[in-house]
Length: 122
Length: 197
Image: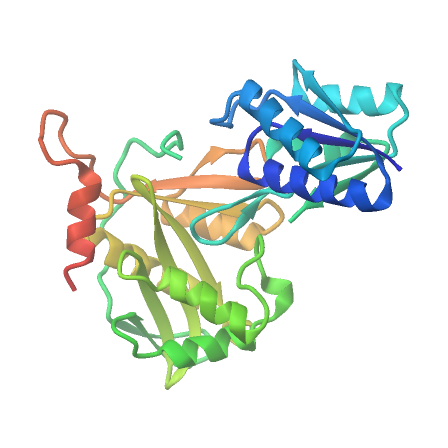
């Protein structure tokens, strides 16, 4: 399957990265990892790129890691539509000290606007 | 999480529990702070029987093991908890969990005790407890469609601080901020008070 995984540097986005890379190695997915701008993230895009590239290397898969600038939600959807992706994978949300799950604004936008299936990784 | 918004004005004074009242079904209900381990097992029982349809954003979790893990985290020494008792049964539970310079609030009323006025008394009791312990700021999230909860929080004095997500975020100021120029920072005061039980 042609999969687009969007990550911005939040904890849940790294969980999504690891799970998607793991799955791509088994399922032979055609995976692209898009490093997007996430203003809520404390990790710089360069660090996120490094992290993504080392995850791909470790898994020994042939996935593209791409820097995507601009509004993260709409850019992901645009890429998915113009390049024929079948699925978008994102982090499954932030857990508060209370244990409440909150879905990030990027995931909300993608969920409501994507034509493809969307997977949120918990 | 220090960029959350709170009302400028400090909320009214809430009555400090323990308090007792008669609910709309004629049941005698007592609101008491949770202290030590008393009530822990009764609380596990309430959450084990909790209607999954009343879960909010993943809590309470399902299954006794996860319930205990969750309770262990939110009943810690740095958290504040009150329980609504009907005899020796837990009717509801409300909690304040520290998050940076503020506290996150959550409240749960068992399905057999809902729509009887217990939630209002329970949240007032929790805020009275928190106010007396020196807590300054409280925030919560609530699902937009949960009109009953949203109107309860508004009635209490919470103001919406973020309306851009699936969940509404609301804030309340319980005590004034420490004077700028004062050496002590607010959170440490609140903490040492809270631990002083």
